[in-house]
Amino acid sequence: MQRTSLPIVPMQLDSSIAIKISMGGSMFQERTLMGRSDVWHKVKILKGTQYSKENVLKAILSAIEPAELIPVKYQASGEDTFFLARNCAHALDKLCKTNLVIKNPDGDPLILIVTLGFASIQDLKLNIQPLIVTALTKMYNSNRKTLDLSEFHKDSEMSNTVYCPLSQQRTFCHVLKLTKTSIAKVEHLNLQKNELFNLTPIETCGLTSIKYLDLRYNNFITMEALAPLKNLCILKLWLDGNPLCENYSSSKQYIDSAMKYCPNLFQLDGVYIRTSGLPLTYTNYFRNESREGLVTKFVNHFFALYDQRDRTVLRGLYCKNAFYSMSLAIPAAVAHKRNLVQFTASRNLLKNVDSNKKRQQHLYYGQDNILVGLKRLPRSYHDRNSFVLDIMYDNGKCLAISVCGLLRTISTTSQILWFNRTFIIQAGPDHEYNIINDQYLIDSTIQEIPPSSIEGRFHDDVVPSCFSVSEKEELLAKFVETTRLNTDWCQTYLEEAKWDIRKAISNFMKDYKSSAVPNEAFQT
Image (cartoon, rainbow, N blue to C red; front, top):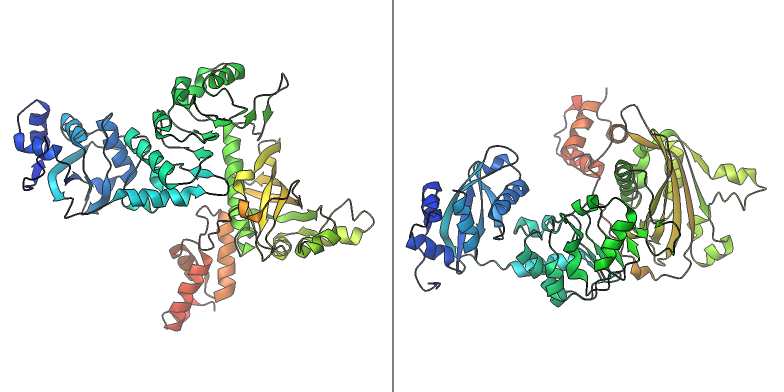
């Protein structure tokens, strides 16, 4: 029986007391505090600052399985770290059985000290539910009825307060129930990279509208883990990156096993499986997983830069002798009526058969000319969810990559268009890939798609963190040209701004106006 009316007297657990509790000692006061639901307990990790927050918490949660707890307010205190938790009597009992010494894959064991009854829930009022609902709302796309819970515990705002991994069944169930009550209809649920091993919460939460389920890169060992999906009408399923994928010697066995639990399935891991005896049809084609990783990173990096307001940041991606051209398949007269005039500067070889001048005029050569051509096009947002990727050629050093999908123009008359972009990229001596040819084709969609169906998410203040050597050289040269500072000072400003050139220039201007930049900092 919980004695919530008793005054709270904090008590400290160290290894010696934990041993007594684990061996069945009475320890009445400690056990009473452990069982109270109206108090917060403090778990301190000695020298916890030596390790990452996620690795520390994962090690602790792994040690208490199958018990669960939700760590909140993780923070540093000198060289130690600590977090708070409540309603976790079973988890505390499990910690006592470890003698408060936790195996640490990253180094020496983690030594814990627990303060039972550290604070009352009245002294420290913290409601986790609104934080989760806010995160869910941000992750939901109402136009597509898509909920993206990939790496849920890493949500930037929520993770500052609470560590909420979906690998804990109680947490997973609570999040899905909040989804049902707080979020509109969900048809596409993305659960990538959550270390899941059990889908029972999907069955118990009542989310019956799910049609597309992404379970890639989790910990499902056998196909039996899909049993909770039997009563759902799953049409598309992704299982890549799970241990269960290694259990099958043929694609037929793999498909048959998945369809046992998802009988309505027509696409598995991006492959159309209802082909009536014809070869399987793949949405994307990659020669192997390493190439898939390379191409996916390249494509995401390119379009993250391309969709920014200032396309100058693309310079470093192109080889100095690169070619670029854009073709518009929409007739010029129609394009004018649809306010797509900026796209009509097109090198359409089929329409410019007799005009060599036009064909040459719209073929851009070299980084500077390519940037001129790219800047002439209106701002747009390329929908990553619509991308279809293919590697058409690969000799180990040179790749031909085809990307097609949907884009949304950003203007007063926003429209959805179809595009295909073919890149030829080549590896340099340091295995850095650059574009040597870029062909861009734009056309109408087969059916009219309302602009509201694609939500453009722009981050103008975000500069990619994976600048290559050549990209940094380009930024450095531009900064030198703009400020007339010498190279060393420019390098310092850019490094302090993490290669965000806007921020670096802003910092320089502040210093310059306050006379904080010495004369020797400038070029002589």
